[in-house]
Length: 372
Ligand code: V47
Ligand code: SF4
Image (tube, rainbow, N blue to C red; front, side, top):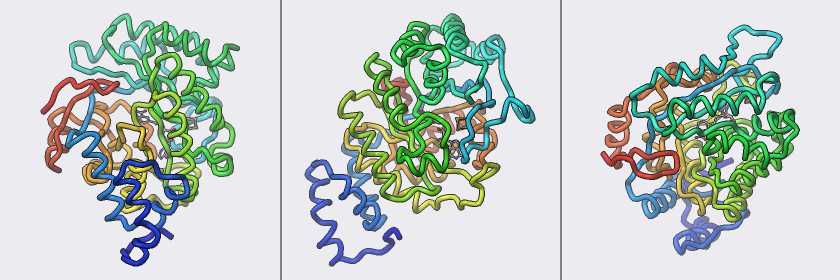
């Protein structure tokens, strides 16, 4: 049971040493992380997370101008939480775009100011490394300026295995074609028991971490995610963040951490209630506190909703992702509020300013493009 009320004696005895460490900018241990996450009142977590956010990022809140390209939702894997994937054998509500069709999607943005393409989809048995190398080359031919953030570690593991190349060779080939970075998807929860219950058949945690480490060694930065609010326990949350903190110490290659709230419509885990906003606030706060070597904590607004995103800007979050332009289906199919997720620059700027923060348009690697 997570704590909901404050008791000074308890705080003094158990939490005060941890709070002192945080204020003194000392790293907290895994055990301290679990204790704080489970026992600290939300208000305390919020104060600590917000103080760290403001120290690292002031009031600045980042967003970018981006679109998604989702090559297919056909997937060989069977993640229990996924509302988006379809089997090759049952093509109802399925899509598989040709390279020309995807390039045409991008051509629609000719002259528009997008700076990033987020390229992620299901793991289609017939779309492999060479297909995607060709796609990235074609994207860069028409938009050499655009940052291509592409393929989760799950997709990369499959395409390298199928092409019989090492992760390093595969990533180098994609980089040579024009891929700039990796998104954070596929991480889910690193704990083996929980992972086996929710997504047993896709790449394991060690492989996810290895692929990101390899990308970082090739100067391809990446993001990291965590799927929360299903069957995981506090110990799994901290374990997940601990593995990321360790890798970040080693490589420094992660740009942002993105907690993803489990949405429960149209999937095999629909019987599980979604997390409350209170749990959301606790998760984002502990992420900001525990991940002391991450500069950016992102609330992905199409997944968590606009109102919650505004709230989370006071609970450690300093990035809300981008304009999207109704180009992703993964969360609308899982029941998110925004069935056609899109925000104009004016909408995003207003969303951020309305809760007293400073909107800054960034590129994918957090260089400032424009301050509003
Ligand atoms: O790995 C799938 C999640 C992820 C559901 O790096 C679900 O900037 C909640 O990683 N409820 C893919 N989550 C998306 C992703 C992402 C999104 C936006 C930005 C970035 C980035 C990365 O979506 C999957 C999985 O964890 N997911 N189904 C669901 N029902
Ligand atoms: Fe496939 Fe990704 Fe859905 Fe899992 S989450 S079934 S890997 S599309």
